[in-house]
Image 1 (cartoon, rainbow, N blue to C red):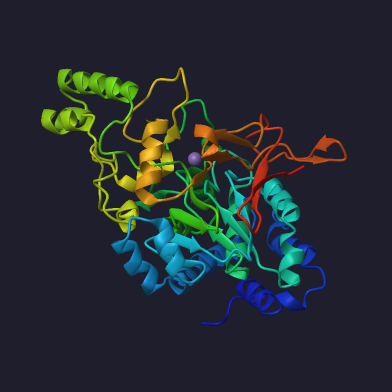
Image 2: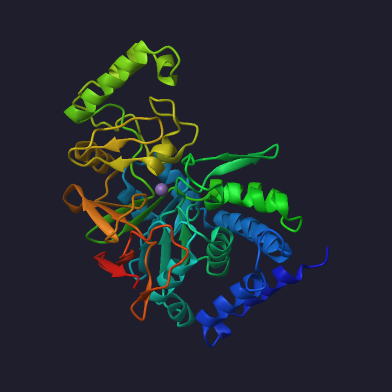
Amino acid sequence: MEKNLAIGRIIEFKESVLASENLENDFYDLVETYFSPIDDFFTDDLSDVYEVIAFLTEQIKAIHQTEERQEARVLSEQHLSFKQVAKQVEDAARAHRIYYFNDSSWQNYVIGDIHSDTISIKAIMKRSGFFKKVLNQEKVRLVFLGDYVDRGKAHIKLIFMVFLLKYLFPQNIYMLRGNHDMGSYKDGQVIMGVRIPEKDDHKDWFLPYLKMVADANKTFKDDIIAKITGLFDDLAILCFFLYEERAILGVHGGLPRAAFACDPKEIEFLQKLEENALNEENTELSNLSRQTLALKRKLLSKNAYSHLTNIAALTDDSDHDFLDRPRVNGMMWSDPAVEDVNFREDFHRFRYSEDTFNAYRQRFDFDILFRGHQVQPEGHKKFFQGNLINIFSSGQIYNDGENINDETAYMRVPRPQIIYLDDQGEIIYLDLS
Ligand SMILES: [Mn+2]
């Protein structure tokens, strides 16, 4: 088959990156060659955008394959300690959908939720000095904690840009999966990983929007939906940064569900849940045996994660927790429990106490957890003595004293931020405007 021109352009760009005089401008010019001709996604010719996204999904899957390291795979299956594994593998090794970063000479930037907002992405690239550093062949690395899509205004362009960045700069860009980066497409039906609130316009949601565009526009074939969700399935779940004095785990939401409750409030909550389950005939919970649930609320002296006997178990999709949900889901959906808020359990979402968090830290041997998932107006928020840090990276972006971001769904975030880790692993919060 003749090589598609639209794809040819990005292949050529990748081959000549280091010859660029102004990579930042050239990158955005490249993006605009595809997007500036489009006025209306429902009627204009989207063949080039379609071809490129389809190509990028395949390329990125192939890149993920090249990141895989057999040694990291074996060690993750043998060890509980992230530190132990990270000490023994090559920098940026990937295994079991976990990235291990151990070379502190890299400048690491960690980025929270983006949600279909290209204005914040541009600010992130600028704030990190990404393009200049790449041109100078500095070791710069951007690690995204997931939630690329939904809610904002630039669904297709955002996914195009992030995928293009990973394709062009595979050693500088790393993507984790968020709870929104999910779904599937079967028999003409979009199956969502998240629930759309009733009051919401479906256009504000990525997969329904793709489906609407594909239904209306023959140049944007609907098989793109399965290609994109297929790549979402291939994204990593965890990343780990090892520094001499500090070990940091990164994830979108939080923890897998513990084997039993550590905190008296959690136990009380689970008791109520169990009572309700046993009283109701038709809930999913009623299918769980009394014995199983009762076991979960016992305060045992063992670690609440002693049922997980190696790191690889964390990201094993075939492994389910006691509510019969894939363990991986918990890590994308759970939130830290704050005072005066009840613990909640609704299969997807749950809150973890500080005791549970500390049991998890102890079991898997890390110091600090970075996560996104919850909106933080001040860009970041610390929980649990500063050992859990929530970062949020979409919101108001200022230029000459005025907010220029008309794509974000988070106008209530006046101060989106990213994290910079210096070569000692010191945590520095950077404002995007
Ligand atoms: Mn999220």
